[in-house]
Image (cartoon, rainbow, N blue to C red):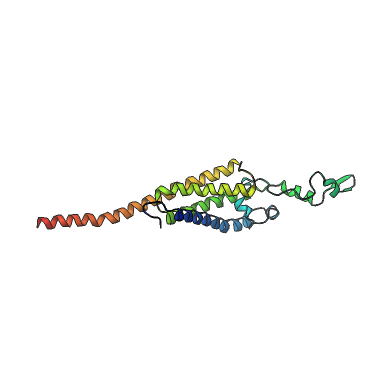
Length: 212
């Protein structure tokens, strides 16, 4: 529970860690089964499978961009690792890599985006339960998004440049801030009315006793 006043850095940091952890746990529960059911299996297997951590941490997966590295031997010395047959040069596993990396599964990108929005819906409950105070909802929501941007940039070694990815992040933040703030304000109003009501009754009873 947050303190009613003052600043507690230990509590603040612990809340940030808990929120981020719950968000990623929710994604790890949602993403694998939905990818297995709806994503293209061969492309998914080539990218590491439905349980690959990159499905959560790599922004390029949501953006629908290739993330696999070129195979060994595909650089300037690739001719030493190739064979010739019928006047054509073959690179072995490099030809397979080129064929698979060139095919991007757009369904996978939409699944990841939908899972992110569903996780943001769960974050509303986490904010409502753990953070509680309406004035802190904006700060914690933006902090969650910011930390993910830092982690996904580090994981992919590239800044997110996809408009689709940024739209999903913006929609996620707006959803969390608006919904969680409304719920917290409504709870505070309800608790305030419950607390004030007995005091009002006591005042009226006191006035009647003085009349008597």
